[in-house]
Image (cartoon, rainbow, N blue to C red; front, top):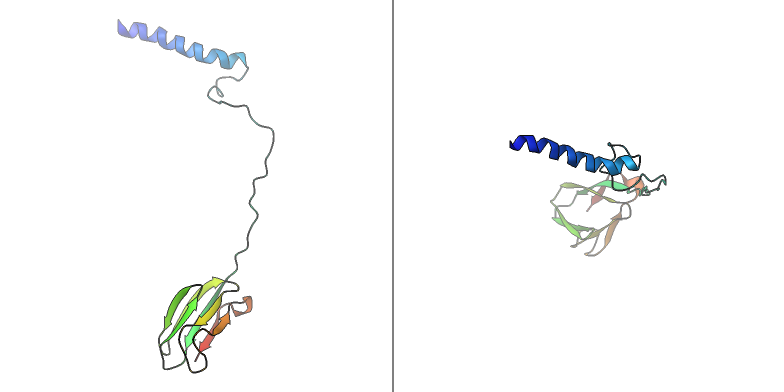
Length: 123
């Protein structure tokens, strides 16, 4: 008994829902679309920002442990050790402690495009 009433009620709901869509000529495929298609094309492209990353190998050729500062980060170079650092162009490398040829706070080098994949020796 219950299923005989369910079928007409379901059909009635479908007809009521489809009637407004048919009245506007939208058809059944766009029945759930709440807005009309926009013919205006918006240009939302984000301009490309070229981030030039440079990889430099810092090599400690002294017998002392050397500490360097690159972009507010501290790195320790062991005696006769090396460290590869990748950073944006224009990044400066500063000495944190004294060495044979530099003092604490001295600028050791600055990353430039021609330094990419090169070795900088620190004494």
